[in-house]
View 1 (cartoon, rainbow, N blue to C red):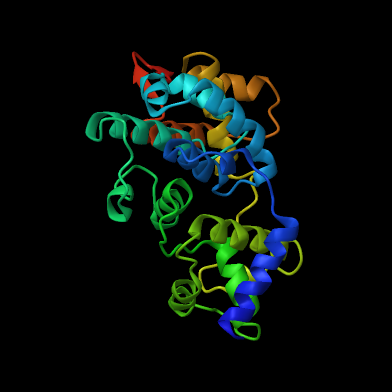
View 2: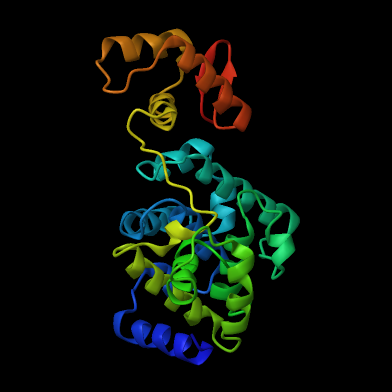
Length: 272
């Protein structure tokens, strides 16, 4: 397919079906970071109300950096993957302490922030400052595989990246990436070409997973500090739908403490 034809198709779709999200009405890199982290492995329809609420409570890096982790995790409830909330808080602390509250306009430096990888760094640059930078993620993979690799299997990113570079709108990278995201979201509802990517990973079910166990344990500790013995008793007595063995509780408590999600003092686990 010709590059001009491809770009025309994407822009035409975007002109008619562009989606509207609150994070598309800001140029604040902090607010864009919050949206990008929330959108990792979570559908936009679930993110929207949580994003609005989160930004109202923590409108700046200073507000998030000075909040307690308990306050942040309470606000994060229902989104899952709680480690993302910890990364956001850690990033806010770093921005305040090392960058005087100002996000760096540098692709490599942005990736030194906790939880910020190449795609998130690129999105911040494009959406906050309209800086043309090559970004690849699931929706973008879907679009390029759909148009340029229709009969291919196990398409590697190294085959897609040159096409992203060649088609990048250097005058309006912000809306070009919005257009790609929206077209990719549309494709996911039909046949999801990203499944043909070498990098495609199917998300495991939450129900019955260790992620669910971690979430339940953390939720209980957020309610009030508890000992391991109290946690075991709570799960045994309350008829939780998720079964958690004493061994699983022990391991998850150790993991959560190592990650900085919880702390232990005199046999009591709590969130700071």
